[in-house]
Amino acid sequence: MQPKLNIMHLPVYQPGKPVEDVKRELGLDEVIKLASNENPRGYSPLAKAAMLEEIDQLHLYPDGASVELTDVLAKKINVDTDQIIFGTGSSDIILMIARAFLVAGDETVMADETFSQYKHNAEIENVKLVEVPLKDGKHDLPAMLAATTDKTKVLWICNPNNPTGTIIAHEDMLSFLDQVPKHVLVVLDEAYGEYVFDDNFTDGVQLLDKFKNLVVLRTFSKVYGLAANRIGYGVGNAAVIRTINQVREPFNTGRLAQVAAKASLQDDAFLEQCRVTNRAGLDYLHGEFTRMNLEFFEGHGNFVMVDVRKPSMEVFNLMLRKGIIIRAGWKQYPTYIRVSVGTQEQNEKFINVLEQVLTDLAVLA
Ligand SMILES: Cc1ncc(COP(=O)(O)O)c(C=O)c1O
Image (cartoon, rainbow, N blue to C red; front, side, top):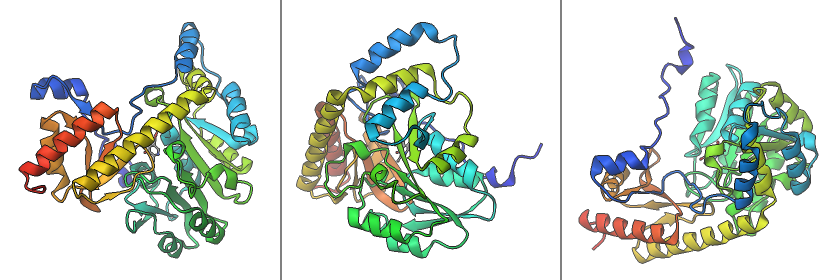
């Protein structure tokens, strides 16, 4: 047996340890996970009711085309139904875009650092990766344009960017999209877009009429709190969406995911509560990092990246032993950790433990 040579070096995804395992191994009563940008408020009660109502139908295949959900979403975001595709999380849409558009010999442009799945899927398709370093934690759009060639097929933008949490100013986004050659598909990943309050943020869907080579990705895993349900979507011009649909698995979103997503779209009050409490959490973390004299990137999603001035894995391990799981280990940011916004109580415990750890390491006096 001979697998594809270009996937031989790929690591198998290592999920973070379950909270229960960490508790048992380290003898801790409480472990707080602030590592995966999940919603600490859970998900909408309307979604729960919809799932309970659907529970007796699980012996039947779901609607492969997610017709009802597509209708509700199309009305909500004011696009045609043929402009929408659903996936098993937005990760599935990333996979499908790579599968539908990229072949060996193509080039694809993305930031370094950004969400890992763009690179992962591009590597599977054996294309040339062009990674453009971030500038002050933000996409360096002029450098990304300069890196675009006749061979570039797909260009990935993450707004707000994971892991830095930064956003692209509206005028910069417009001027960038104006200059991207029309043969390049621009993927604008807005997994954390609903959290943003800044007026300078771009709602990518509003740009679809002008830029036919744009596709916007969103997910129900973050502000909607349905990470375990695995459902996300792409919105673009109908021809692009049709192409992505050609490589879609027939039943890639389940019944519970579809009804929960549909109900979530009808619960604006829950969405607003989550946005507001998340913003308060961001403000709290930013304020505490400033008090501790730590540099950070201003977060616009539901997480913040902060410079702890020590190798990040060392800080990660010390915090883990005290019952706080965060993310660390980015090669471009070796002294930064990323923390998700939790409940206020969790945020305060995180700050407490960080302060203890950084005091022990003599980062803080
Ligand atoms: C920027 C970004 N895009 C996409 C995803 C994928 O989310 P999901 O597949 O759960 O929709 C994530 C998950 O963390 C993310 O951070």
